[in-house]
Length: 173
Ligand code: IMP
Ligand code: MG
Image 1 (spheres, rainbow, N blue to C red):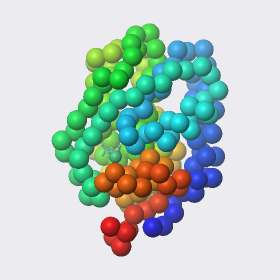
Image 2: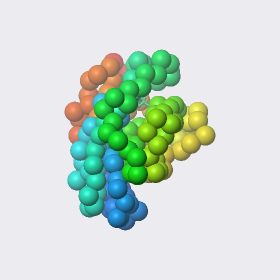
Image 3: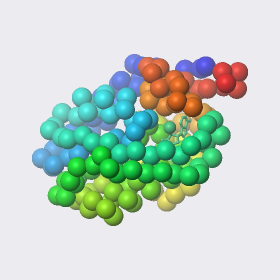
Image 4: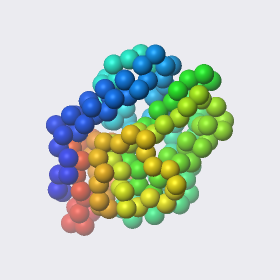
């Protein structure tokens, strides 16, 4: 495995994102909504970097795929969401790859829960793979088309615990 971003680089960038979000959402009723499971590490770090009061919640998305990242069978669950009426939402995921997961979740949350606003945050954005019109509103790093793990990102359920972002190579499989 080859390290793409170290734990220190990620921590610095997450602090910057938290400060920026704090400025933009000052005096607004903010709910941070993480996408399970990939966002848990980012959510845990990011909320501690957002210096204004806010609430958190989680939704689920699973797309059943391994290293090939071919989108299919997207399953969404909004069961864990509290009432979002009158609130601003930041939808947080680990990575924006094709963008289909975040686009579908954003659409469903807006349709079913009608928050005042909804913006998206990801740690990583694979800029060359986008298949939807929307782009992330906030992102940590733009990355090339490689399969990465760590800091919440998995390969078949493993490697989420790594403190850094690493490129998974064929020899690692
Ligand atoms: P999208 O719907 O194509 O944007 O894919 C988003 C989801 O695919 C993420 O939430 C991840 O679970 C998964 N994914 C995409 N690329 C990678 C990767 O490089 N490593 C690990 N998971 C990935
Ligand atoms: Mg995943």
